[in-house]
Length: 135
Image (cartoon, rainbow, N blue to C red; front, top):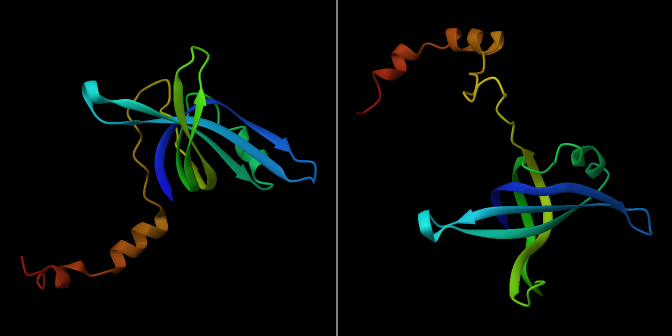
């Protein structure tokens, strides 16, 4: 199982197989290493099911997504210049699309607490609890 935050390198494509099953292909990349040692790891993942049709519209080039991928294995191929390259292939089990920052400002907005959360926090008496913490 691979759990990774990736950048999408090409808009997701949805296809229908001959037996009517929906399949989405997603090309993405993530970096390994730091500074001068940073290298990209290229990935071609697939996802199966009816929900792929709805997800694909949000999985566009440049977006970020957190993926849980199963059956991950490297696949070697020849590039146009004759060199050998490797791409990871696997099946997406879970996907979370990362919200992009707005164009107006790069600071993420803090979430406003819900009224239910505020009511619950006020109903708990934490003063008694603090006295029992051993540090």
